[in-house]
Image 1 (cartoon, helix red, strand yellow):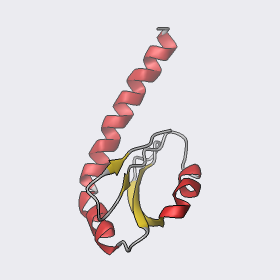
Image 2 (tube, one colour):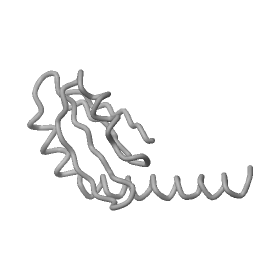
Image 3 (cartoon, one colour):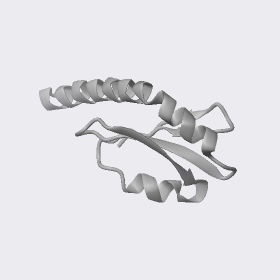
Length: 92
């Protein structure tokens, strides 16, 4: 593995840990949004790479791919299914 690739891997790992910390701190907000979600909605939590801000909102299931496409490169965006204790994580 080249030096540049190694540096990227380390930076990505550190970013992922930071994103998890932000999401942990925002867990009450995410839980509140999950509680308000209705049938057919999922909750998308997002941590932006540059500012480290975490937020969450409901998204109709059919619009998830479109919303995900507009995230900044390097964002972390776990998707919560409010009525099912499952998590699908995606990172770009």
